Amino acid sequence: MLFLHEVHKVNGNRADEFEEAFRKGLMPELARGDDARLLWYTNHAMGSGVSYNVVTVIAVKDGAAWERMALSFQKGSLRGWVRDADTLRHDAAGKLLLPLHWSPLQEIDFRAVPTDGREHPLSLYMEDTMWPYREQYLRYIDTSGAVYSKSLEAADPFIKIEAGFQPAFGSHLRREVMLMQKILKIDQLRHLLTHEIPIEQRRPGGWMHEGLKLRDQWESKLLRTSSWSPLY
Image 1 (tube, rainbow, N blue to C red):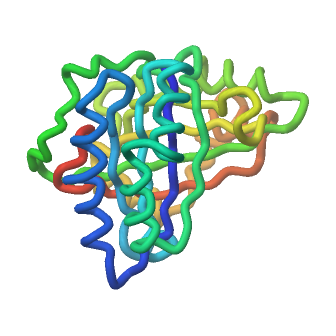
Image 2 (cartoon, one colour):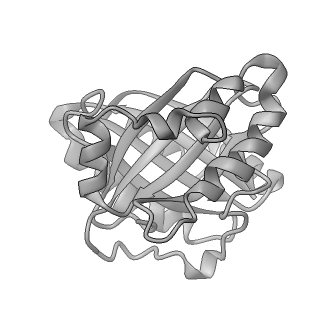
């Protein structure tokens, strides 16, 4: 299973049209076959990042399915969709991802993914992207699963890892790890944003201490799902 992650720099004057292009155009078109499904359609939460940035994630069955989809965008049935979508955005950057070996999300049952645009309450995700030290990349993947993900299994957590990814070989930066984490408690997120990290969480044994042995650069984005995003 592959995952296509894209960041779209949308024309702010045409943001609603861009969303509709995914909702009424690409999502149902992908659903006509068995190769791919749109999973997430999210916006940067207002005030938390670049304006009118949209992040989408598409699940692709395998490498052969990705090739068929890529050719469809290039010269097949989706070529017109790409042409029209490009009139609504300034640019787009994509990367092909594989699930981490410990990721809760490994395979997708395409039959269970909604494709009809049904609406639901909005939800908030924290998308963390990390760049481990060169010699610590594989160790970081293992340790983030053994230490960080386990630390979130305590009773009543405020955040939940739904998926962990790394770039597919040769398709993007090698040393990168990305987590899709659903915010379960907004009040605790507010506390995280407005308070220093407690000293006890920065002591040896805790992730904020142990993680610094493996990386010190990462980026967090707050992403709000659309009202019809298949996953939310």
